[in-house]
Amino acid sequence: MNRATTANWNKQRYFDDVAIGDELPSITIPITLQRLVMEAGANRDLSLIHHDNDVAKATGAPGAYANTFFLMGMFERLLREWMGLQGKLKKISSLRMATFNAAGDLLRFHGTVKQQLDNKCVVLDLCAKSDRGITVTAEATVELPRRSV
Amino acid sequence: MAKPAWGKWGSWEETQGFLGKEIGKSIGADPVEKGSIRRWLEPKEFACPIHTDKTAAKGAGYNDIVAPATMAVTYGIGPYWAPGDKQEQPGDEPKQINIPVIFDVPAPCTLSFATNIDIEFFEPMLLSDEISCTSKLVAITHKELRVGKGAFLKQEDTYTNQRGEVVAVAALDIFRFVPPAEETV
Figure 1 (cartoon, helix red, strand yellow):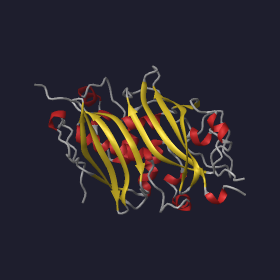
Figure 2: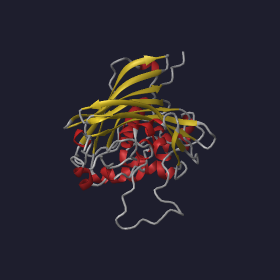
Figure 3: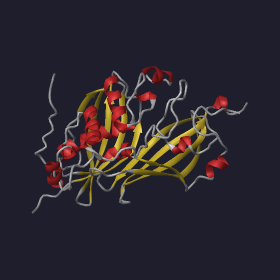
């Protein structure tokens, strides 16, 4: 299926509209060697394991695999598309790799609202999954505007 | 004695000597600008207009186009080559992204892997901002895991703009270790 991004940038999410357990619209993206090369050039982590299949395989990986900069950036995209333009990313914490996100994998990024703080911030559980199962987990804190009363 | 595969070799006493100290500083190769933002958004198929359009950014409360927050780590990386550096020769080791806690802090270890990353964001990064990164070793926790005996080293990276404002603070936990087979010879 050929589709453009479904994010609606005219929609702003407010703290008042959020409930614990809310799920963010997920994002699916194929990890190809071309994408990894584009990403390495753009994020400037040029370690060979992230764009050279032979080097990555020699370290036990199934192939070249995405670096943490890409995964953090994809989490930012997931959060931004849900928050809207006035939301602010405050923190990504406990980012942990469970397994490789390698060329040939289809990655799906997910987020769930876990907690509300200080009448403005929201804490979310994040993860990415592939056919290997959960590949990376993290927690994020974002700040959302309040509806004026 | 085990030979280091990568990372500076030394005793745990030498490692301890770096605790609480600055272990690295890098000055980002390029200032924040539209071209590098666009190339960063491209492989993520990330379409948010506050990163590309001044009017949208102003509507969201910024003075100008703002870079994605997680780009701080990219804008803090120094050049892989700069005028005055030696020219690469055939057979030279490939260049790695510099992680001071691995490459500049000595430890009696041959292998390492990252276990956990936390990053907190503060001031936004606006066009023409210049980002630098200062790294400190803030904790050493000795541990024996299934993969071998070693220690978790915590590196704290503070990303600052040219006005001295903190843009982001990241904490990176790296386990450096010796596999059991290499421990004693």
